[in-house]
Amino acid sequence: MQEFTSDGVRLAFLDLAPTTQDKGEPILLIHGFASNHGVNWVFPQWVKTLTHAGRRTIVFDNRGHGRSGKPHDPAQYSPWVMARDAVNLLDHLGVARADVMGYSLGARIAAHLALASPERLRGLVLGGLGFHLVDGEGLPAGIADAMEAPSLEVLTDPMQRMFRSFAEATKSDLQALAACMRGSRHAMSEAEVGAIKAPTLICVGSEDDVAGPPRPLARLMPNARALLLPGRDHNKAVGDKLYKEAVLAFLDDIAA
Image (cartoon, rainbow, N blue to C red; front, side, top):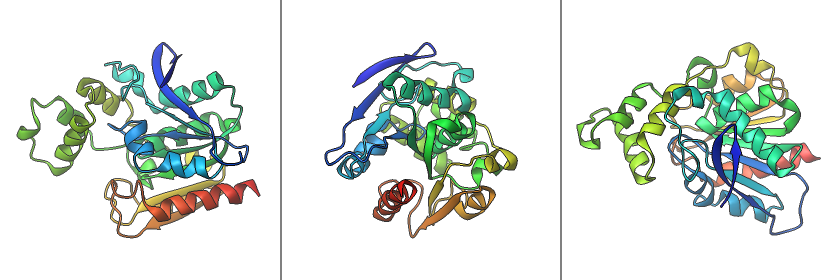
């Protein structure tokens, strides 16, 4: 992986060329909490899907995750700060405008990017995040406590256990994740969401108990559409075939 420095934090990234004729619009992918570029985008075949579809595909590890720097200060993880990391990466690569897709926390970051720097986006895809962008601040605050628990075995709450287990599986820095969870909790107002003018696709699994419903969020936005992925929960929706097909069709549609 390559590296650059964003506001004093080292970030690791990959910039992958299309494997077929370049369609001329790069896409930036922003992963979710406790994940990394590989778990969220490489292993579920998103990178292969997009590069094979003629898309220059840029992936990176968020601060606190993967191979990137891992501050332990919650103030280093506001969605605005993390959205600026994404813009700084585009600047580093000389990319004036890109499509942006985020999943879960990555979708929250992508929405903040769309609001703060609308000129940098052509299209926006929010995966694994629906109306909880507005009526929730993110994952339950107790997830941070789960990161700081002495072991997985002492946890009894199913969601705490799920995220602690996932964090251990990805060999994450648990203190950095606790700081990220505390610092990234921020809800957008309905007015802020309504100010996002970029064409937007919102994709959420029908069994997702983390994201909130997609359609009420889409109704707040002037140029958004929603897709419910049948039978998929928050984790299984990530690599869903229908999700991929919808994203490719959406990107082609906004290019027309």
